[in-house]
Amino acid sequence: MMRLCYTSWLVVLTSILALCFFVSPVTAQETSAPPVIPEVQPASVVIVSSRIVTLEGETLNVTHLTIDSQGVVHGLKRDGTEGGEFSLPLMALRRIDLSDAKITTAPVAGLLYEQGGGVLRLAKATIVQRNCAVTWPVVGEQSVNVPLGNVRALLLQPPSEPGKTDIDSVFAEALASTDASTTDRVFVSSEPGKPLQSVACLLESLDEQQATVVYNDKSRTIAREKIYGLILANPAGAGQNLSAGQCLITTTDGSRLLAKVEQLDGQTLNASLDGTPLAISREQVARIDVRSDRLVFLSDLQPVEVTQSSFPAFDWPWRRDVAVMGQALQLGGRVYDKGLGVHARCLLTFAVPDGFDTFAATVGLQPPVRGKGDCEMAVLADGKEVWRQRVRGTDEPLPITVEIRGAKRITLAVEPGEDLDLADHADWADARFIRGK
Image (cartoon, rainbow, N blue to C red; front, side, top):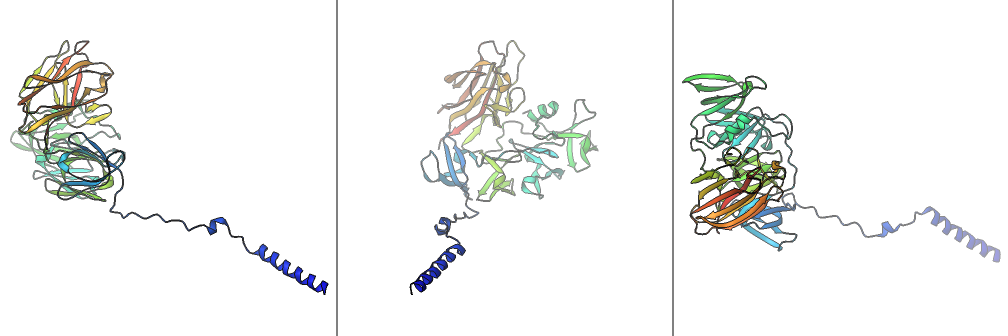
């Protein structure tokens, strides 16, 4: 009996051990709660951080930024700014930075310079019946018609190296001119290494093989391969503000499109170029500079009085939207598309538009001065000094805002400091009048 019981217990124990051996143990991971699946955001909701700057200079970090068809900007404030939803008129803004996307410039077939400051990097460009038909890769293979009145110039032999922006000095000087002109100009490269030749004419058409022009009352053709660039007639000259109420849209290919912003949602920026609709992927938009109707750039105006006298160097004429030597306006590593480039001594006097009560700019000396340069910059309202600052080549760019309420004229003055006027290449970057709300 004892032997039978012992044997029975031995069988039971052996069965239990076998069961434990052949059945896989349950791990702690298998007994834990199932993983939480993150909620997928709808494609139309953009939570990427953007940054907006108001006309008064306030900076807001925001998410979920959109622009409705009525021109109102909506979003959510975040990080260091008072939280919550906000809505602001587009024309109350100075700039919208949509992303920190890297701008990559690849070689292109041509550059189109818009009246008002835009530059498009093109794959193709032709001119027929006073319309410029272009292929701009940012919007795909569709042909975009740009009225010739919106076109300042076409560069048909742009730099071939990626990122290189230098253009022929003869063409650059003509492009920077603010003088009124009633004729078109064709710039022809005769031989490598020799200066460009320009022909004053009437441009009739441009196709993939040649340009047709009227010269000395006769129709003539010029092989396209010989044409470096075209600068079109500009009867109004300087002083016209073509960009008011529009935006300068910077895309990731390095283009800057001057157009009206119609709407921005989670996927697309819809714009119009003199009535031609354009749809740009939001991912390709890096920045939007607003040409508010509450803002007027001084470089779009004609000064009523100019005083220039350099010593001991020869006179350096003041320049619009470029530095005094013709380079891009650049302060603190940032390039400005609007502003005034001058050399000491220079006094520029402008009439203040009705209703505008503030002058603002970012001032400093061009970086090529290599730390040299020392001057006094001042703003006078109706002859009375309202701001003055000593500016050196080693100084950081200085944003200024000056109240000029009631003033009829303001004068921007740059006087030599130490070392006479050596390297005193001063910039009034983004020089602008602002109208109160």
